[in-house]
Amino acid sequence: MQLKYEPVIGLEIHAELQTNSKMFCSCSADYSNAPEPNTFICPVCTGLPGAMPVLNKKAIEQATLVGLALNCSINEFNTFARKNYFYPDLPKGYQISQYELPIASKGYLDIDSPSPYPSPARRGDSLPPSGEGLGMRVVVRRVHIEEDTAKLSHEKNYALVDFNRAGVPLLEIVSEPDMRSVEAALSYATKIRAILRYLGVNSGDMEKGILRFEANISVRPSGSSEFRTRTEIKNLNSFRALTRASAYEIERQIKVYENGGEVVQETLGWDEARGVTVSQRGKEDAHDYRYFPEPDLPPLQLDRAWIESIKRQLPELPDAKTRRFMEQYELKRQEAILLTSEKSLADYFEDIISISKSPAKTIQSWIAGEFMRYMNDSGLALENIVLSAEKFAQLIDMVTDKTISGNAGKIVLNEMLKNGGDPQEIVKAKNLAQVSDTGFIQEAIEKILSDNPKEVEQFLAGKETIVQWLMGQVARATKGKADPNVAKELLVKALEERRK
Image 1 (cartoon, helix red, strand yellow):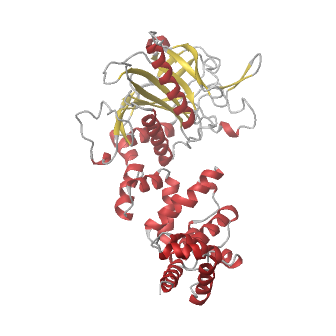
Image 2: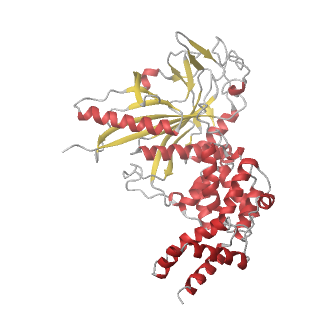
Image 3: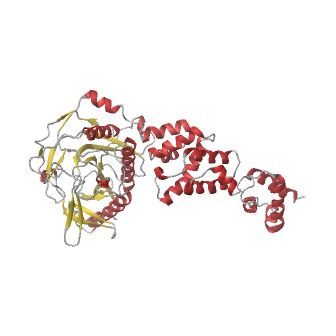
C-alpha cells in the first residue's frame, strides 16, 4: 500500500512599502521612475563608510498598520539588527532588518480554503465572529521591517548593479507552516495582497517585484504531526509562479521519499520556462547569517497612545466588508467575496448602488458577469476602465425598466467598456430599444411558427421545452428588441391556438 503524503507550507511575503523616501535615508523610493540606474542613491543606501542611517517614520506607521490589520500584537519595544551575508546586491555586506524583536508578532489571518487539513491553530479552537464562514486560520508569526536590496541585471559574462532600489522600505510577513494545500497558500497570499492594497501601503504589483513570495515546503505522511526537512523557493513574483512552483516541489519531495531518498534543506529558484525548481544554495539557518544588534540605530520605543492612533486609521477590511455586503445587500457569500476582493471594485459597486434604482443583486450580476469578463480578457485594472459608475448605473436601469433587453444591454456595455459613451445615445444609434408592440411581435411569431412546423408538432406532442428554442428564433427575428415577457406570452398563446 502506497503511503499518502500531505504538504506543510509556510509563506514569507515581502512587500515594498509606499513611502516617498527610502528606509534609512532621504533618497527617493520611487526607483521605477528613476531617469537611469544609480541616480537615486547616497552614501547611506550605497553603504559608504561613516554613513549613518535614520528611521523613516512613515514606514514605521505603515508597518504598524499592517501588523494591526493582521491581528498582531504590536511590540512597543523593538530593535533593528544586521543580517550579515555577502551578495553583490547588498552594498553594505549586511542588511538592516529585525530579528529578535520585530515590530509585530503573534497574529492570524482567517482564509477560505478547500484544504481538508485543519490549521494547527484551529484545532480545539473556535474562530471569533470575524472568522464566521471561513475555512481555516493561518497564524502570522511575525511582521518585521527591513531594507530592500539593489537590483542585479545578469548579462552573458557579467552582472550590472543598480542601487536605486537599495534601501527601499520592505515589510516581511512570515506565517507559521499552517497550510496543507497549494490552494490554501494561494488563498492566504491573495488575501494578504488585498489587505495591503486596502491599507494603501503596497500596490500589489507583482510583475515589478513590489510584492513577492517565498514558499517553505515539506511533505509528511498524512495524519502525521512531524515536521520534516523543508526547502525554500525564493522570489516568486506571481500567483501563477507560487502555485506552480509549490505544486512541483510537493511532488518532487514525495518522489524523493518514495524512492528511499532524503530531502536536502536548501534554497531553490523557480524556472518558469521549464516548470521546475532548481537548487541555488544550501539553506542557511538564522545563526548562519550572524545577526547582531544594529549599533547605529537605537531601540524603537512605540508609545501605546501612538499605536492606538494608528489603529484608528484602519479602514474597513475585506472580511468586515464581505459581512456587511451580505447583510446590507443580501448577497451570497461568494458574491460578496468577489466584490470585496479589491477595494476599488467594492467602492465601484457601492458607487453604482448609490445612483441606480436597480436591486443590489442585479448590479452584482452585471459586475460579476460581462464586466468582469471584459476586465479579465483585456487585462485592464479597474483604475483604467473608462466606464464611470454613473453611466453603468444608467445602463443597468435601462435593462431593469425594460427600455432594452438583457442581450442589448450586453452589446451596449461592451461598447462603453471599449469606447466610452452614453448608453442612451448608443441604444439610439444601434436601434436597440426594446419593442413591446404586440402587433410587431405577433407578426414575427406567426412567421416563425409557419416556417417551423416540425417544432410546432413537437410542442403539441408534449415537448414543452421547445418553447425556449422558439423564443430564440423570436429574439433572432426581432434582433433582440422584442420584450421577452410579451413575446413568450404571445408565443405560448399562438401555440395553444394550434391545438384547436
